[in-house]
Image 1: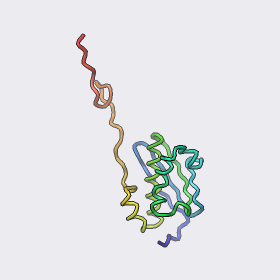
Image 2: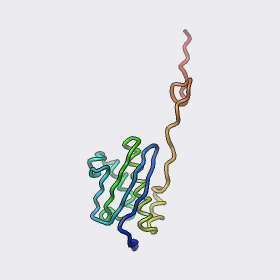
Image 3: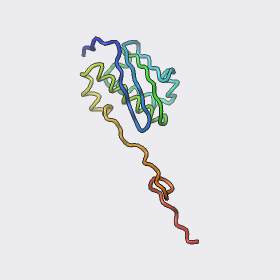
Image 4: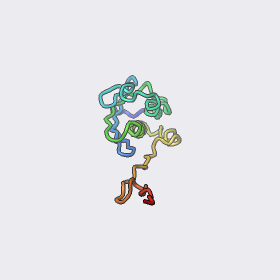
Length: 133
């Protein structure tokens, strides 16, 4: 697995309304999200594991420095957007990572998003509650 002779790669990851712009360089394994370390931005280990999953899959969690700008959505959607972006940038870095990342499902953009509220309804599909009087 020989890395390309590039110093930096960029990619975008998305989930619902969250958008993560990911930048990767070779380094010591530092991950910075919106100017904060990974542990500060995503305090729950479930979210941290979600972000690190593509790196662990290809075995590069200690070799890559990652800088992320993420905005929009909730915390969980942001974590999934970062995961999607990290997976995409790893493929730009080295095309040989594609089969492993594809098998784990990290390259698939989860297109599910919130359905809009319709007029005459309480929510997107919830109608009025029936009242006798």
